[in-house]
Length: 205
Image (cartoon, rainbow, N blue to C red):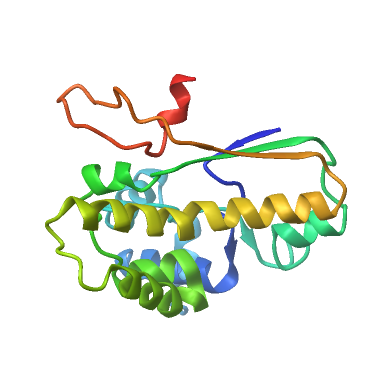
C-alpha cells in the first residue's frame, strides 16, 4: 500500500469530531432538542449548510472517527500494533513542504487557536505554542518566516503522523519504507506562482 502525505492524521477522535459536528449543527440552526430534524433535511440543504465549515482553510476538517462503535480501539495505531489490520508492505511518503500549498491558496500564514484545536484536539495549545516559539523573532514578511512556518506546520500536520504510523507498522512486523519528496524545481501553477515541495507535488512522479 502506498500512502501519500501521511496516513493517519485525517482520522478523528470523538472530541475533534464533535467540534466539527457542533459547528455544523449551529450553522444549521439545530440543537440537541431538535437534532432529529437533520434526518429530514434534504441533501441540498446539508451541502449548503456545510459551506461555512469548509470556507477558507478546510484542511482535515472531516474524516473517519474512532468512536468505539464503527472503528475498534482508540486510534489507527492500535489497530496496526494489535495486528488486526491488513498486514501488507507499506511505502509512506510526505512532501518536505506540504503546507506551502495552503500558504499560497488559502493564505495560511499563522496557526490560529481554533485551527490548532481542530487539527490536534487536546494537543492544539501545545502545538501552537511550540510552533510560535520556533518562529519567534522572524519577520512575518520574510522568506525565512515563510519557509520556517511551512516546515514546522508540515512536521506537525503531516510528518509526525507518518512517522508514528511507520514506527507502529514496523513494530508490528510489516515491511515499511519511508521517503520524503524534496523536489521543487518547476513547481509552478498556471499563474506562475512558485511552490516549494508542497502537498500534491509528488503526483508528477
